Length: 201
Image (cartoon, rainbow, N blue to C red; front, side):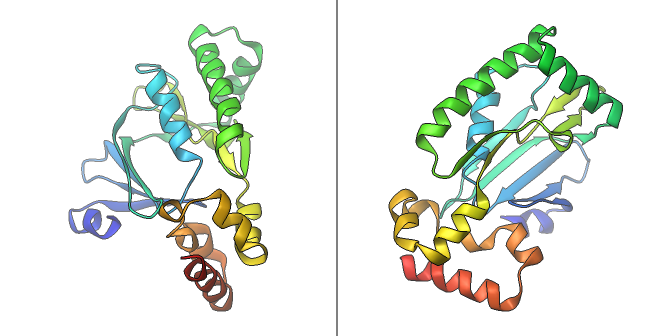
């Protein structure tokens, strides 16, 4: 998927822990490609529950990929200035903005649901990096949910039976291919993770 987008003129514009983001030629949209990310579908569901919210991105397409990956196309968002992030976090805490309060209520409900169904769920996190700015200047929230990645990868190496019980094979085939591993791991660590994933099949 990523190679196809590059051939079509999309350019890599961000590399996070779980995914790579590419920007389309005219700059209006980005594609997020994640080989494995149990938390992002919960964020997409939040956007579906509140269509038209000024605090959530417009999602153009979302597709589950073979082996547990996810491909999402959404509007391009710029980095938010520090004062904008601080203002949004204050408004989140105070609950004075009805549109933002609606996002918080829906996000907390989804967080509660995911805690019961998503293995190694780690909760709702509104940090400065999760606050962006749309083309019209309005702040937008992204990637507000997370899983315990350290716990997942520790289980892969130390207790693969538990991981196999909690994450079905169809959802973990590309577990060792996330951006964080590619960016930070030694060749020996990558080989150990790849071998552990292969042994689960």
